[in-house]
Length: 211
Ligand code: 3PG
Image (cartoon, rainbow, N blue to C red; front, side, top):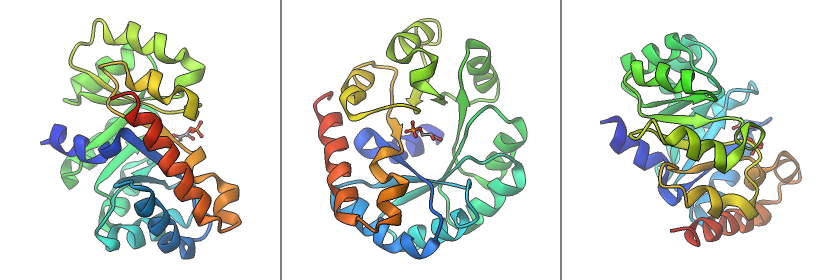
């Protein structure tokens, strides 16, 4: 079921959000994340290299790879064909939700308001990406939204720095947090895989402190 697979994507309760400019970096990046202890990663389709990177990372077999920034149904289909096992969208897009259902992969739509959460619920989904989390009001906003929506799980993303990971994960409705600093663009450009492993460990340590 969706719930089971959503648990898979949140192993470790930290989901790194990756923007890759060159798919040739995918193997080393995958090694760095696995070495740091992560089992899931979101690769965005913000760059043309995203799709090839998803294929390379999915082929490893030791990472659950999702596609992020999926904006239309065609992109969702291509991502799943490349090996994506879940799909994340910045907002709520019914066509993408339908495409993911057809493809048989879980989809986590972005939601920033009560109305958008109700749209997700109407579509049969119970997990949303709360985006952009910090700018929307952070932990307090999630607590307020979680009050009426008891079954909804949130994956806050946007401005989640290491110092606040534990605060977010302490909220029962929060399934996992998403963050890009673990795999910051400059680290990939510099091929600083050791620092990516170090940041992975730092993020997981912060998450473990919340458990
Ligand atoms: C995303 O698309 O999920 C965000 O770009 C990640 O937010 P962050 O860069 O603030 O971590």
